[in-house]
Structure formats: structure tokens, C-alpha cells
Length: 618
Image (tube, rainbow, N blue to C red):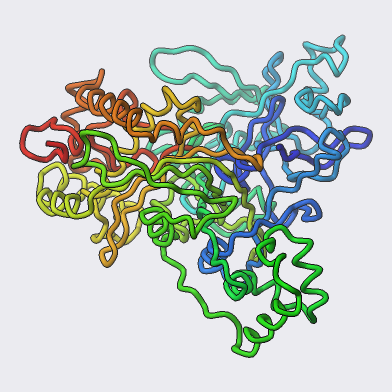
């Protein structure tokens, strides 16, 4: 399933210019992100410009309540991206996600002319083959090197490769004109810029020259720690909302496509089966059922909505009686929402039962791997699961902390207070591993003052202080290191055999709270279709397979192609690195798999690399 990316249509030309997966619009290319389409670069517009006629509501009460807690009670729904399979190939479709060209400076590959899209006339959008959105392109209408070439055959102009951003999250086009003419006594009467690249062993040689006054400057002058001195102050631009606000902060040079240009602030929750009594189901869907006027309407709604299928065997009068009783009580009892959405999941996964199953959740315990009783207390095969993930906002330059929903630099998805947020759901399968709590607790207490643990704790303090965030002294460093490192070791091994790529396998770590500690890992994979996946991951949870995978994982953990540098790495002042013995060769995973941005990893807590009793395994 894809959602069309559409822009304001030029007269006589289609509006559809590309497509994206619904999950992409939440995880890596959501509102405010710069997306590379085949022929151009665009920014995803705010949610207040999205059409909701084809945006379906996703039912997940636990996640919705968490979103409301972070964004306000005005949030009424989680919605998918607008999508309609009936007109998905229509080049003039009005269903889709609005985008705008960004950056708005382009470079001609033939004459090297550098210029903005505004005012119109210098560049022209060519998109006359609507069913091939990848052919949409901007061309240099006045290029002297292509005067005899038809527009459809002209080479596509490239988006200018530099942007500027500030710590407040504003992003803007690079100020090419001001940058090139900085310090000149007289302003240039009519700037005409070109951009040329040249190879150099001394650094980047990207020269911007004005053909009118012959002023020239290397973009490298704007790079580095002091590059802001050669740039104007931030003018507070939010291109995804098409507005400006007062700012004045220092600007930072950014390269188009940089990974720190957009970090999504997301929340996710696994579907947990609701209670099977009529009162439980009515309470779970009270916002819908509590608004209905009589038993006849209740029966019609129950018959027409799949999420209420558990009530279809109950007479309408009986359902209405329960609704009236709950209304007389002032509504259903409010359930406490766990601060990290994980406590209820941990309780069910660690104590699976057939009494709490439905079409979207099935979990069955199995025999643990032979020889690893000291490491694995329980293995649960989750043959069916459903995960819903919602986008609450985003940050630039610095990523939010683990499951942090209200970072100080979070940017809004819309101009006003949002009444809904983008979300997507996936169904799949997984393996849940529970570690012996008492042994994990004893080990964590014994290594609290170990130099490697202490070094990471100090690095965390520096990391938090440099980002103006309070230091979380209660964060269980040792416990999280153990679970996270073991998770990454298994992801790398499982990906070799289960039929899914490593980027398709996600981790979900359960560390609990001081009052209710937990030690669990859920490795899952999912697909956006209604049937989910095919059992390749669950099969590896059987004891004969899991034993082999653990053997291989720990054997690989004892060595790395980057040793001894990797094994001996420990963050030292002033480093903010939040990992020790780990690198791309041994532990790092893709950003779609890791929930902590490859932080909190150290092979030494799993296998003996130090010889001083730090390792959890004997």
C-alpha cells in the first residue's frame, strides 16, 4: 500500500508526483522531513493540509490515551495516511499527502546555473506523463546549453545540496546570495549564480560564483564550528507549515539528505486482547458506544464495525442495558496508562494465556534452549501480533531520548493544536525471551561501580547536560546494556535464517521500573497487510534452533574485525558516546530495528572481554 505524494498541479499537468509507504510517513519520512523523489526533492506538509476523506481511523485505545497525554485531550483519533486503491494510479488524484518542493534552489547540470524557483520563469516543471510520476522533473527553461532540446528531453535540474538549520528546529534554503556577496561595499544589481564542484585533497571545493559581479566563495567557509559567523541569523522558517517566526539563532550548514535533519517523535503499542465480557468491550469503546441514542442504533453500529465483533453474539437490548448502566456511573472506570506503554505488554507476554487471545494476538510458551537455563527463563512464541505506531512530532539536529515523547525541541505537525496524528498498523510475529529476574538483578548490583559502567553513566550525564536535559540518574544502565546487547546479537543471527532482512526485524525491550523491574526482549517482524507474516521468525524460537542461534551469537560476540579498538573502547571525558565495545562490524543495527539509535551497547557485558567479572555469562 502506498500513499501518493501530491503537489499543487500546474495547469494541464498531473498533481501526483510520487508515492510512499504509510509506515515511511511515520518512521523516516513524516511531516517536516525532506524526501527524495525520483526527479526532485520535497518536504512533507503539515497535517492541517491533509485531506481526511480517505484517512482511516486506527483503533488502539492504549496508544491514543498516551498520545493525548503528550499532546492534549483535543486529539481524537489515530489516522492512516490518505489512500484510495481505486484512484491510486490516477495522475490527477486529489487523494494523497501534500508536499512542496524543497529546497527551492536548483542547479542545472549542463550550464551549472544556480537559482531559486521563485519568481517563476527560470525553471519549469515538466510532468506530462501522469502514470509515470518518476518522470516529473524541473528543467532549466533558459539554459543556453540546451536551446535546441525539447523540454521533455532536457536534463532534470538537481536540488541544491546545502541547507541551513538551527537548534530550534528551523530549516531554510542556504542563503547563497548573501553568502557570496558578504562584506562587499556595494550590493550586486542582479545576482546570477553558478555552482561548480572540484576535487581536492584539502577539503570540499564547492564554489558559488556570481556572473554579474564575479564574486566567488567556497561553501566550506560556512562549515565547521565557526561557520555560523559567515551566515546570517536564522529567520525562523518552518517550510512544512509555510510560515516564519522570530528566531535569530546561529545557523548550521546541513547537507541535503543528512540523517540528523529529521528525527521522528513516535509512540508505539502492541495490541492486547480486551476482556471478553460485554462490560469490558463496552468500556474499551466507550467514546463510540456512549454517544449512541438507543438499542437499535447500537445494534447497527455493532454489526457494521469489525472492532466490535465481540458483541455480535449479544442481543442489542443487553448491550444497551450495559451502556445505560455505565452512563449512569459517569462512564467506565479510567484505567491507568503506563508511562512507557510496556508494563501491560510485559505482564501478558511473561504470563501468556489462551484466555487472552484474539485474531491480533496469540502467544504460546515453549521449551527453553538447552544449556541456557542460566540465561533464558522462558521463551514465548508470538505467532500473531499487531503493532500500531503514531507520530507525535519531530526534532532536528538532535534525536529524542529513548521513548521520549515531549523533548524540549519537539516541533509540531500542524499550525494549531492537532486533533489527530498520523499512524500505521502492522501485523506480524515474534519471539519473546524472558531472562531470570533475580540473576539479572544480582548481576546489575554487582557491576554498578565497574569502570565501564561508570564511564557510560558519566557519558550519559554529559550527553544530557549538553542537550539541556535533566540527567536521569534512575536509568538502569547495566540492565539495559545487557538486554540491548543480547537483542542486537540475536537480530544479526536471526536475520541469516528467518527469511527477513535485518532491517525488517525490530526489537522491543522491557526493563520495567524500580517498583516493577522486568527483563525481556521481543524480536518481531511485521507487514502492513491484514495477514501478517509467514512463521519464519517464530519457527526459530523452537529450542533446537534457538540453541544454535545463541551459540553462534556468543561466538561472534567474542571477536570483532575491529578488535582490539572495538573491544577496548570506553567513552572518556569529553566524549558523549553512549556505547562501549560495539561498532558496525559487530553490533550496530539499522535505525528501523534499534529502539535506541545504537546507543547502550557493549559486548563486554555479555561475554568476557575484560577478564574482571563484568560479563553476565560465566
